[in-house]
Image 1 (tube, rainbow, N blue to C red):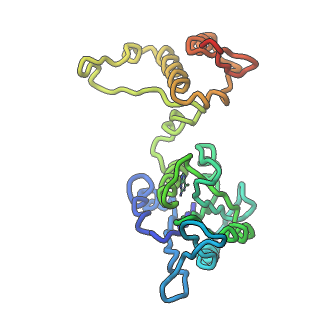
Image 2: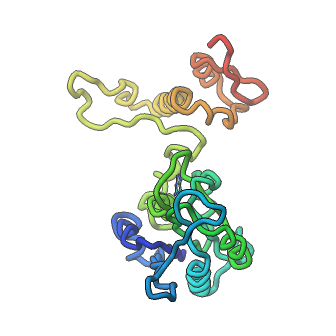
Image 3: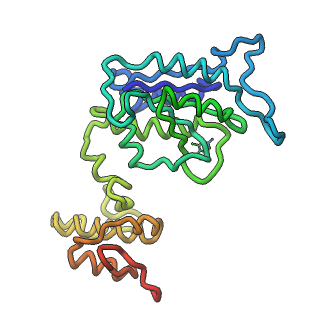
Length: 270
Ligand code: 6GU
């Protein structure tokens, strides 16, 4: 996969040289290039922003440096680009609190692409015409990490590149670990423990020491239900409860949920 990141703070992306993603780049699994937006300015002061039409606080990123930068990176499209989701165009991801919510499902979608471009806005954002213009050359996807505000897209890009990069073939050593993690099945992960079995008067749940793999799998699944109900009940709206074994229905009943038409329904009295 090829990834280009355009930013006025290219040093902000230095952590992408570390750990799993850094290794993937060294191993040639990921071709990641970071570009300084100011390299695409033409004035002496390398200006990237200006005051907003209509007034208001803050500054807006000027369109022309972005058009120059995005034209350059679109031309760097990987050769032999066979194209799954995006009709031959690279995907332009624009980090913004006003974007679509970035999820594990979207990380999987993006991992199928051959060319991702991240446009890091700063200040109050990028002139909207850039996104309209870019649609001729890219599949444009404004993306938000969640309902809070960052100063710019760089931190969000670190998160999204890591989430996508670790799904690329060969990046995570043991692909099994991608299957059993939070959000891969729409539930939060079960709690984990390691040695010693008793630590500061706290014991590891006995079932995990039992050697009974069926029992262990059931306990872990029920812990996923319990945690998800407690911390992220919104995720249970999407959960397919159609084919749950009786013990799992009972586990949900204990958490205050009934199964109705394959969906979980919170009991009003619970
Ligand atoms: Cl993706 N970008 C910015 N600037 N702020 C955010 C965000 C993204 N997600 C949440 N807040």
